[in-house]
Image (cartoon, rainbow, N blue to C red; front, side, top):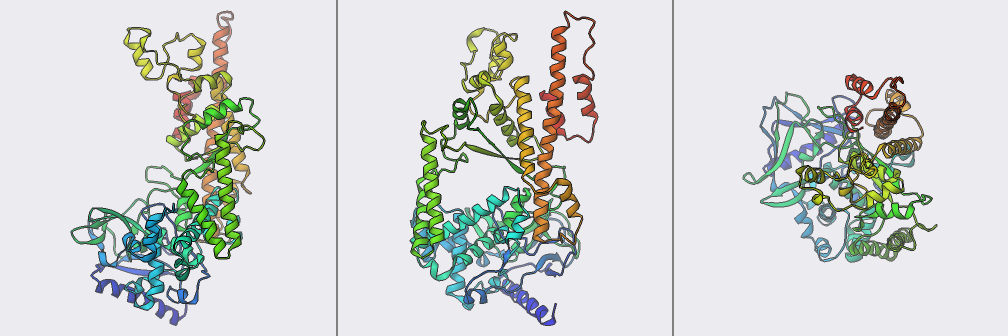
Length: 613
């Protein structure tokens, strides 16, 4: 690094801090530091900033106008906030006055903001849009006269660590991951928002190109804080506070102090002199960190051992299913709101936004964006109409409804939904009929309270020896494909686990390399340097594969144990006629106890096998 560049960088931040102090900010116990490389725990990747919601950020060359470029920082560097001296617990270490905050209301007050408020646009991130509009308008209209110029000067000009800006080679590192679809969807959403706003407020074209709009979106989404100011919920950009890097468990907390009329960050534990001061971006899956902030946490494990990493598992009713009509009807039940993964537009305002985006792109001479937007509109409308038409379901032209469930290594609500939907897909004709047809609750079968107790728990009042009872003891409460929360019978549960094994094995086959290769690659910091996009992509896909392998092991273990249960059931049936026959060994109880004693097994697998089965 040259002396000249060091001076420029130091001067830029010095001016920024002086501006804050002169405006009434207080952060005298802290200092900003830039890093040349890997130098501390959880070192930031270039610009890992904060947000209170699922948002975004990053760094890559911006093909913006010369005027725009001249107003934004030319350097991109890793940096963090450090304690000058020891800071005790419960100390306000940062206080940024309200006048230094850029709020949603400031964007709404602009001419373009007012037009957006009066329109019926269904934008992807409305609050972020207004912050972006103010940022872009102020940069263009006020240039060097802006009150916020010192803040703008330290914003990164490029956001190349954010996946929406990655090149093809970097995106190839995510092959097999659903994150690629999410990246594409985000780019489309930003593009649609830009052209839709241009249609109702053409002046947006005068202050920002699409690339500048995308840059603003990334900056805003990665840095904004969701706040309550004087009793009003809003979002804001908070200079200096947005420079704290991520660490779990959290060491600080933040809020807007109505009495101080300032945004404050308070320590939750003592911070030693020289240590980096962190913010927690929350307990999140790595796909959210990577998509929204441009980094992935190598060990994303909480202090209690829980890892929030997730992977989406896709399920669908196949067109060649002999029970397609009845299974599809049950599969669709309860999802008439359009939020079912079918790709329908859902609400008229969403359709309006898409149409306006296409019209704006066409009027601006961008035939590619116009054609793409109109294609999305036409496709969504056709899919929506097809879903409503009974005659089209099951036809060669129809597309099976795909449901996507995000699961992690945990027996949480999403895992239960996954198993429920798998049970529906694995059901035979009798099981499916019983699932889809909830009988009347059997309250009147007897005056005995036992019947009421069983009914409230979803059990029928039928004789336990009755085949219907054995097959469908929770039928009274089955409503949708998400509600089959308990095993139906041995046959269905075995078929469910076999289907789960097929699904996860298929998902793993989409990746170009194995989990073992990912682990080995991450040991090579020359090929996959610290904080590089390639490394973060590798961390992301490794985490996805770990989850898929977990469910593959879960499924295979369950299948093996169910086969033992089947053997024991057959033994019990033969026992009256073959009293000398020895029971199958090892038996269910023996294996269940061995699983309980095996510390290496994940508790979710143990509890399912030992309690559920």
